[in-house]
Structure formats: structure tokens, C-alpha cells
Length: 408
Image (cartoon, rainbow, N blue to C red):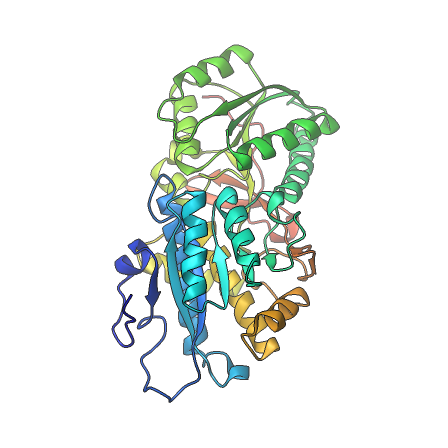
């Protein structure tokens, strides 16, 4: 593969390419020998396949963060070393994600960031562990990512265990304020590790807030028709429908339930892959009053608002993939500064001891325990009038919840 040392990379090329060395717009041109060697950052995301949009959004966030680090002078503790992105397309396939890790290792990668989907991230981070290379999980939610005792794996965001706990507490508070209107739920989930794991956790914890799970309904990826599932939900007549799936299926299921006028007290998802600006802008009527517990930016953060404006100026939407990958690049840059080196052992030690302040996120202080940041917390959001509003925790709230929702 030929390195492009001075040519700029368009946004389209950056988002759509497979494994490539992205310089130019990300690392400004320089004379040979004028700067220390660049730090190569492997970014592995699904930019083709059924979750291509999500992977492209992660790439956009990573590109902007790398650009910001380099514009600010690079890694100052390393003489101004710039970050360069090695781009990999996992194609939503575990074996391809592992192959990208191997290719990037041969190119001298210093750390990896990825992979959106938990199964791909589990395999890719295991492959990276063979070489002792740091692996930062930007979006993957499965707690299996962090329970294997791998010293090279770090996750800034919360996993689905924390998200479920916080989500159940949030739903319980909403239901209590509504005089316990919800007593039953149906959980619809994708059949992979992410959806199945989340659904089982949710079902086990719902009784603690006085809600019984009537049924767990699994579906494949991709699924193109939810008519039968909608009919099943109607026959079960739950008070709440809970969803745990990826973007396309999430939106299609929501639209089907809306079209079939399935009336419930609320739609409440935990880590709903389709609850984002794309959904509420394209389907404002469908999304109205839907709630989700998920990764979200701090609406009261000036830095988050500035990045949101910048992302939207490109014609893109400010989805969680953008700011999660952006934050992970900044976490890595901070660790490089404190390590003063791209040496893998020093970098892992710097990450493990990190107190990085995640300016964009509604998090507490960063503290990694066995690679998991204990300060990471989700937010509870609701779609209201074509906007996504934070309704909990109260410290970050931008609106009050509407629950139960009006009938169709």
C-alpha cells in the first residue's frame, strides 16, 4: 500500500475507504525529518454492511478528533508528534475485524479504537492482546469485552450492565411518578450478543420496580418486516414495549408499531441502536415520546455544543458514535502526553492510571478498574417535538419527561 504523505483526503474517501493510511486533512503535510514519527492509530469500524451508517459516523468523530489534536500541536510530550489514522472496515464480520488488526500491526500501529459491534470488538481486541497493543472500545456495549482480564483493553463509556441498572432505576422513577401505570412489558431484541445480553439483564431486573416481562422476542439481523412481531405484541397487550437492537431494525419496528396503532404507556429502550437524531428527524411522528437510555452528550457542555455545531455544518448528524469515538481519540492523546511515548507498555500504564476529563459526556471522574471506566454513565432521553431531550439524570436534564404517553 502506498502512503500518501501530502495529499488531502476528502470526507467521502475517509468515510468509505477500507484499510488505508489517512493523512493530509488529518495530519498536515511536513518535510521529511522536520517532525518526529507520527503515532499511528488504528480505527476499525463497519463502514459497509447493515450498520455502515454507524461505522461512518464513528470515523467522522475520529477524523475530527485527530484533526483537532494535530492542529493543537500534536503530542507535545513527544516533540509534537502527529496522529495518523489507519482505517479498517470490519464489514460487520468478526474475521474481517481480526484481519484488520493483523494488517495494522504490520504497519506499526500504536493503538486501536473500535469496533462498534461487540462481537467484532471482542475478537479484535483479543487479537491486539497478542501484541500487547492498547485497544480502546468506543461504542461496544457487551460486558464480555471487559471481563476477560485483558490488560490492553479500555472502555471509557459504560457497558450494558451499568446502562441496564441506570435504565431500570430511571424507568422505576418515571413509573412511580405516574402512580405505577406500567405493570407489564414486552422486550424485543436482536438475537446477537448485544441484544440478547441486554434483554436478559432487563428481564431479570424489571420485577425490582414492579414490572413483569411478559415475553422476550428475538429477531435476526437484518429483519425487513416486523408485522408478525407487532401482532404478537398487540395480543400480549403490555404496558411498555422495550427494544434492544441496531438502527435499521429499531426504526422499522418503531414505525410498524406506530402504523399498526399499538397503544402502550411508553416505548422505553436501553441502548436502542436507532434512537438518534437521524431517527427523530426522519420520523418525528413515530419517535414522539419514545425514550431511551443510552450514550449521550452533556447538553450543558460548551465543548459538546461546539462540536455538535461543527458536525452539523458538514451535513452530518451528531449521533453518539461521533462523540464517543472523538472522546476516545482524545483519551488516547491524553495518555500519549502523560506517557511521553508510544511505547505500548508505557501507554497501557498511562491509560490504566488516566484521570482524563471527558468534556463532552455526562460522566463523573474517569477511573479505570480492570479497563472499565467507573465514571461512565448513560443518560435517559426522550424524543419531544422532533428533538432529543435529556430527562435524567436531573443534573444534565434539558426537559421533563412525558409519561405515560398520549394514545395514538
